[in-house]
Length: 155
Picture (cartoon, rainbow, N blue to C red):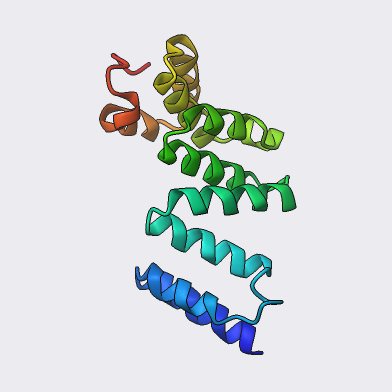
């Protein structure tokens, strides 16, 4: 019962935009409860909000191993790795995810960003085109995304 209350409180802190409060709540969990899936997911959200990219990347990769069919963990792990400056690892992490990622425009958009950052221009343009074909809103995002600076006309 205490674990549930603590998880609800941590979630509330996140809802209020106060990730430090969420992390403080999660630290109060009993050792055996700190490894609960819900606790790890809340911790990951909080770490990403405070831009603790290395810790978040490590935790997201743990979640990828635990739940290899959950695409969002691979997206999060790759994003965090990219934010640490390890774009090659980010690309590889994303490509190691479940096949369902191929149906997600964010997968192709993020791959476009990673490929562009790595100097793989044609691959970047191909994935950006796929993302936009799947969801037109990515065209607008690409125009201001620092990771795609210089890509030229958006496909």
